[in-house]
Length: 306
Image (spheres, one colour):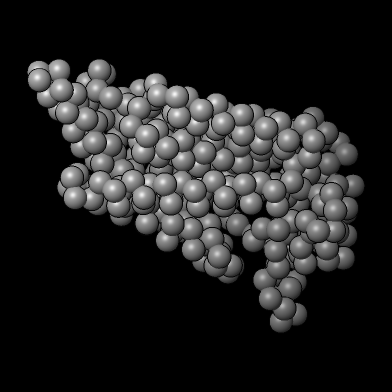
């Protein structure tokens, strides 16, 4: 299958989600003509990438050429910049960097399991954390490879689960135990909010604005909680700088999302750079988790021997 057919751009469902490229008469005429001439006889053609996708992709580039020829700025299509496809990936840089994040979690989880015994305090909390993050980055890779309604929702839901679980983990570490009454209350609250959030977006309406606000709110609580814990432990735990630095770098890296420019070489945009900037951070984060679990294990052994 030719790589040039591998970009899907959805038809606008409302004016709010349209962009100058797909609103243009040139693009709409091009797509309508392509559908009529090429797709009527190929309704069952293709497995994932079908004739309408090829029409939208080809017409997108024809429209970009038309805009540039007339001295206009590079247009967006359905809220996205135009990207050249590689190996079936709709947004190749973001997909590859998502895969890099996933692999870093896989490698560091193996390293964690090698150095931390299963009976260490919070061992299973961090195993679950790793699995949640791996799931999130997997769906990020899938979404940036193939943008559909289903993959978009799975990416958004999984991303929120990462943010919420990180906040939950920060609360548990701050409280010091998963079995205390406050920890159980936090667990129930986080689970309830996750169920509400996913149910609202799935069953009521998929509200992009609400989803963004929820992520920002929980993300801010996550950063504050971890930094408070680091502040409280900075004199007794010499390795907490790893936690504080990771949290700070994650916060700073999000600033890349505020940038908005046409992709470099039609491949590398601000969102992709954000994914690239986060890919090495699991190395530092899991180093912190290993130090922290081994420290807690040592304290536990010391308490038993007293």
